[in-house]
Amino acid sequence: MMYALIPCCLLLAGGFLTAERKNGPRLALLLKGLASLCFVALGLLCGGWRLVSAGLMLGCIADVVLGLRKLFKSRRTLFFLAGSVVFLCGHLAYLAAVWPMGRKPLLCVLLGIVMGAALLKWLYARIEAGKALKAFGCVYFGVFSLLCAAAIRNAAAAPGGFTVLFAAGVLLFMSSDVLLNLYSFGRKKLGYPWRVTYSLLYYAGQLLIALSLGFT
Image (tube, rainbow, N blue to C red; front, side, top):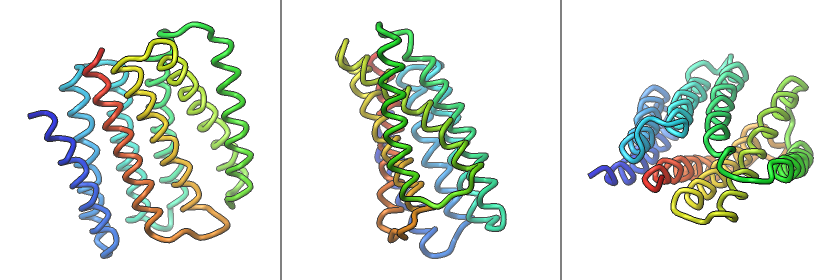
């Protein structure tokens, strides 16, 4: 029965995107929060209370905080930063969960630095954002890149249900965040289908991370 949470999450995500498109920000925020609660519940049912579960919960909170941008448009940047800080805490919880699993930490750190630097160079050439936002982005994507490096290392060194699903989920999550930044701050304005794309990538990523707990 717990796997019914997967289509439920995706249906609620579709509902919030529809409500958002039709100028229903309050309903959209409610549906968005319920969609996020689905992947939190799935993670708890699959693996109980763990650091990964804490990351999922922080992701749910951050998702709602980001959604408040639609209700308080004059404080869009504030809620964007606040939500990003909570997401960063979630990434740190994920990182704490998977970092001890693998060897060669120095190589993993170097890979994370290279990934983060390359991503930021590519991304910052395509978005318009203030210095404070870009400075925070360096920290955010730096930690996220280190998480991706650790997840890839673990999946390559010890392929299994948890490591592979977790790595896939983290990479989808990262892809979602990159598209979110391009959509929100890009020099070239992207159409609404990109909004749908990064939202679905986000929920797919979090669902895979939640499912990975069933293999621990």
